[in-house]
Length: 173
Image (cartoon, rainbow, N blue to C red; front, side, top):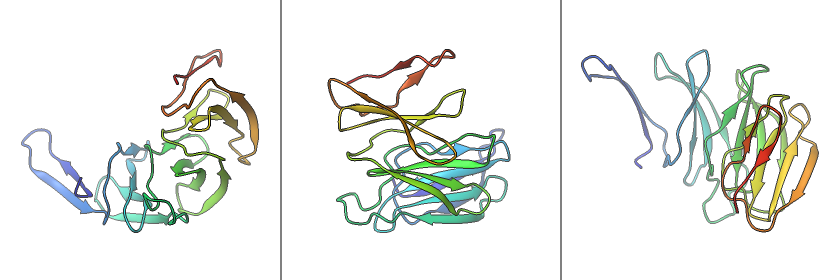
């Protein structure tokens, strides 16, 4: 709640490092295979923060553009990373943003018509799926961010979808 990330020694409980992100954190961090943490931090300067998990040093910060909504750039879910191509997918109000994990630079930005309230899910083929408050499940091309699937649902989809190995998609309204 206070926007601080902590690393502690599981053997003795001592704090190894801590870092205040300057905004509230309400979702779990994402950790890459290189021990890099990606955290959505909200507040007056909503952002994604990349942190070296070994040292607690900030690698980069990605500032959200949409500062007009009530939650002022809040990340509504944990960012996800494909692990294969060095891309982090973060959510902000009505956007999915593809971010280069090394540089923190935007690769693409897809704007939804309605709010997004949960983390996207990456299918085995790389397609990014998410639900929106506008009663739909969408699938995005991971390279370009173009819309590949738009499925109307009987109600708002405010949680992450689930995908089987056969690419069957499950959602709740």
